[in-house]
Length: 68
Image (cartoon, rainbow, N blue to C red; front, side, top):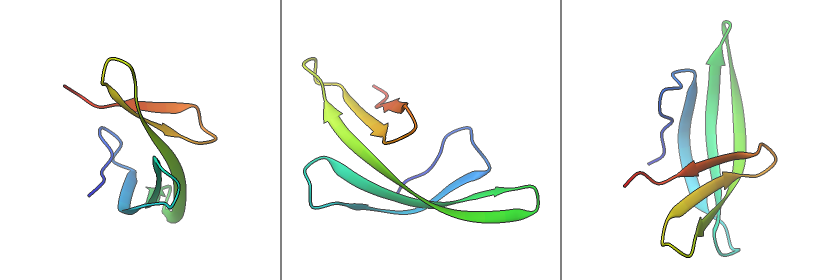
């Protein structure tokens, strides 16, 4: 399950791992201004030298870090 945090207008509906290691496809809907727009984002999951996981959304510069 995937879900956005503190972004009520961004709803993730599904996700799937891609064939390439560390790649994930996120699907969802952006809801606002009386319309709903479907979207798909590709993310890259990585683990740094300290063992912390990040999810970088390609093409946006957005990086999420796993909470401890």
